[in-house]
Image (cartoon, rainbow, N blue to C red):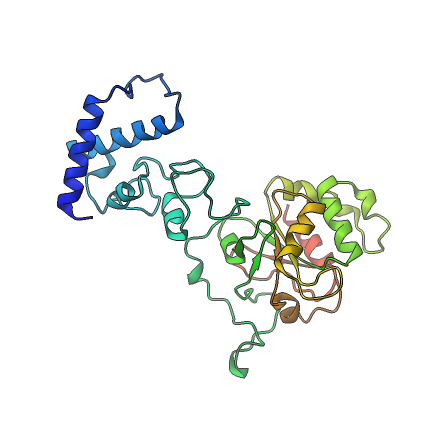
Length: 302
């Protein structure tokens, strides 16, 4: 948008607000129509721009810190005074970057509402060892960053695990398969928070009783990664949605690792397998079999 085009748009916005029959000025009023409310908010902000005040005094300014300049806010139809114009949990600039509509609360970066990290490309994780040359192979170990893992979730979205980085929470990666009975028992335990579901397993520890609540409260991100279907074949997208049908936890992403990267990188020898990461995607535990180390450390952290 040229400066001339922006000036014309601002003048028109001010004129529209001045002659509009909508009452956008009463301090305690709220327009009945949500679209009208959005138009009111935008017109007020744009008319303020035209008057040379408020957050749009400069086309390059980003006064609401949503990673969109004032000029881009106008182009996108977003509110220059709100970082999240549609209230869907994603910043306007992030939605524009990823192609979702920042003015539509039903249009999300991830349909599951998973977190988003705008600078994930800056995370210097290793390559998956079997894709890399011999001089860049990195084996999993405590202190090593997780390679860049993507998977198809229960809603059909391709999810980047690095989007869970830098939100101030640990991440528990739960490596499972559709045929694994204890894996399914853990999923049911998370859903029902009933220790009797796991108490007969020899590895059960009553100190873990509070973990389902930590997950439900959002204190920790729990990601279930499936690498095989019920017949032991490589995972495909429908595997994640079927798991979710059986264990419908809205706050747990279920990812189908269709390229079997996580399992191969860990050189896994048994499941379930849990590994705990910090917010920088660095491994706090390393296990190629079992969940004890990750669960014990998680309990210690809280």
